[in-house]
Image (cartoon, rainbow, N blue to C red; front, side, top):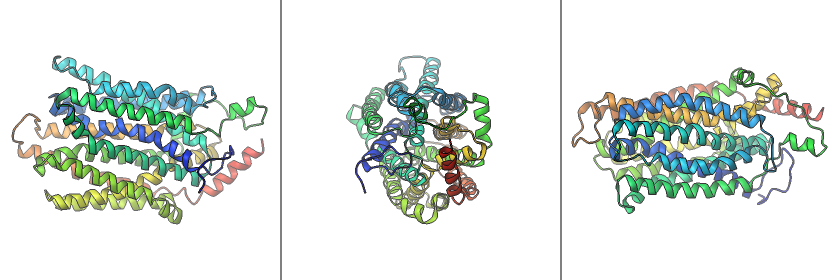
Length: 466
């Protein structure tokens, strides 16, 4: 295993340092993302005192902006002129600082304002962070994998590195957030300071990612150097999108990835509610979250074994099946602390395996689309990762808040009603269970692994025949 990458060939094997630098980009993304997914609804309802139903509606409406900006950002990257940093790293460099600042802004709801002004602030700050700057960061970051290497196995390994380090970032957040809030004195200002700490750490990790990786697939710069390259047609936004939706494997990936993030977000947001109101001890939340994160990390670290033996699709199915089993067991676990931890462990392992191999599936699907239709729309195509993640987390947060509201949840009440308790159980167990069934069914239809060697070989011939 080499430490450094010594080649600029498109299908070269990368060194551990470059893989790690790439993974640190997702480590950075996870700091703000996990904080928002796991704690933002609680911050809005129990710290600021806003309505769970209104918050859920705001997050649901915000998905419209996210869907547009993700695809638009992919189109912008596709049609932008590369610099010495290439295309992907150029935009990652431009967006990482605004993303860090906007993430802090989300947790700065003015405490003395009227409820209407608070909701307006929530809508604007949430969309500026997610629909604008998080979009720019994640689309450019996911585009970077496509530009670093064409090797399917290397992309699979990069997918493992990005998910492992993302999980490490999430583990730091879930295990330290409530403690940091307590250290900073509790209350709304303490939440702001906590997120500020995460923003600084995430920004430093983004810088390492930008300067520690290389874009080897850069046709424009090769052309400027006098080398012959395959000419790619610049497509319009609508035409690019049309070629994407004709790609069945890309659509399967987007649907499966989005559904995973809905389930993940509802479970992450539900940990603190389930611990406090079902198990009657908020102190269980960090333990539950950490068990998921640690076992997820284990699943990711060993994911290369089934990936090499079974392929990506079968490995993803295995992970989805284990996660599904965790929710089935959870139906009968009730308030049992030890049984809930077993469920968290099963879910973490299943999700770890699932996400690690999914990380390298989108570039494969885009290669299939280029082979099938002769059009390269990788910029908009990689937007599927952030699109699926944000649509999933947004819908998950929205569903979570709306169902709580329908159950009559009141974060200021001393004792919750029976219907509010049921709404927490629906959010935390039943909806993720159904979503796990759907995710597994989608992966059963993904059969690209067997076709990929032929696709890659044909694409290589086309490029060599320029």
